[in-house]
Length: 415
Image (cartoon, rainbow, N blue to C red):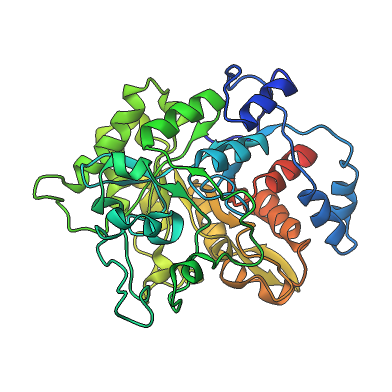
């Protein structure tokens, strides 16, 4: 099986990067080439924020180095810390920052065409659909302008509109104020640690368009089959298996080598389907472990795990992907691998994790993504402290990030 590696790739020239930044393909890159990364100031800001430590010394010594694309660095929805998620612009930014793998979350439209969107029911927060009356009225729950809070229950799904209508929309930063009284107030809800500076004209993509773009950028691909918000089988004849197969078929149609594709799903039945029916893709399918939502599941207690790590391995699953907090704990005041991480290692499972750079400032412990290490997290530099444990001690082979430059820097400095 071909797995994520920390191998770096690079562009032939900075002129190609300039072309990509304008959305213009100046050439293509092979996975065997090295591709130069443009990191910007954030990794250096994070290093300067770190408390004194051997890791800070090590990372500081690399500040004048050149950095290159790394498969350890996965663009989570692109680079949504500052760019509208799942847009052409967000993907290009992630590739420029050295992400060796990019993610298209996959869902479907009214006419059963696949598109890149984190949820089938997020168009009201991630696009400008509410500013287009003829499309807003097609929403599952359109705005109720007879109410003082017309957007309280609004819900717009990709399945409410056709692919053509979907592609007419513009991406924006994922946000919406349900208590707003006006559309302007509803739209002006971007968290203050993000920005609207790059969200003026986000280009939405179909799944096929994302594949074509990723091929041009020379990156690997990790599509996530999203849970449908509509009842399945959709329209009476589009089953979950049809949906899972269609996603794989589009990679085959566009001539993508299965070794460069890592299909993901929180639904273990999707992963099992790919293993049984599309083994070249299923061999490196990723089981996104969302069992933390199950009241009977305790990530610290293996007796509550069904299936166990060994059972997952016996089913042909090779890669598991839990959130970061499930992989770490605090031991003797230090961030250390959790029982969950140790059991995954023992079973021989590869591990990918999510999502770095999604929590905003870490001064108050980092929130949901850092919940098992909150007591040790108090400044933005702790981003690197956690990343170091995840890579060196847990042994993750890929890290989803909302700002891939941070992982790219770490990979380039420590490899």
